[in-house]
Length: 322
Image (cartoon, rainbow, N blue to C red; front, side, top):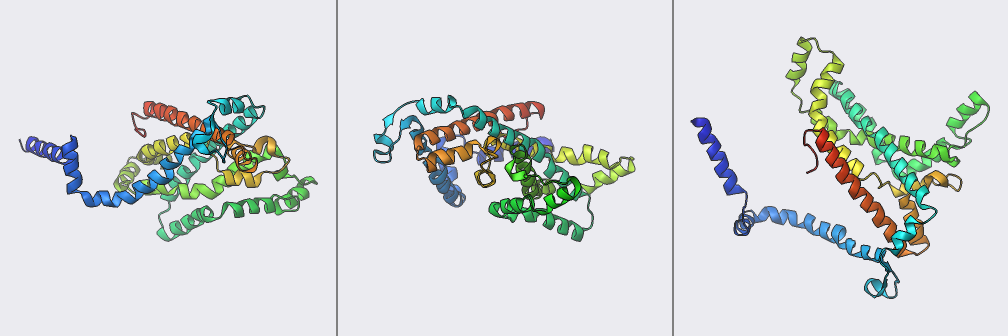
């Protein structure tokens, strides 16, 4: 009887808290107006800087002229999209973007998880903090500085090539050869971002009850078994969400780093959609065409996000973004 009374009380509180009609929703807003005032700045900024610029995407369907403006420019429909899809550069640029994003996701996604699992085994807090500081520091290095370091270390006279010259007799021009671009991009990206990305997993593992590990130790479970049956199930929902978001942005590669790493000889693998949009739009002034290419890239991301979310929900017992 007490359990039933408690359940009825909880349901009554839920009915009183959650607005069910427009009238009750207005009353709810009046009652909690201060919370909505706190939300208002973030909502206004989102509307202005996220949704407002979407109006400009209409130039992808026009023969845009800065003199005539967006509304005065001639409507051409899907001409700019057809132009990109029939371009001789389309396959190369699209595959370069897809390969760089896909391999980057596959190689970089497990690293923060492994770092978090290893950090979770460090029992001395002072040592753990020093290790975390060492891992998080690369995230605060500017992309320009990182690329400059890559050119210095991988130059024909750099320290890495000095070792290779001593071992093999000749240096390797890493930054000029197309076959090395993806590996350099991905590995350097893992170095700069993996430590910082592990924070969310470290925080989740901090909530694991130590008694679970103690009980597992008494039952004879080794380290790998404790990680498999205690730690991984704890962070599995977070892993699913992070993977969905990463897969949804699989075509959204950072422009700065790719553009700064480009040389005249590595373009066959370094030319990707973001750098192509920059060159066509800002350097060549073809704003409508570059907008169409960027919108095409965004649509691919949306399709991938919905697809990956659907697959993960099927494999992860219904846990996904929505």
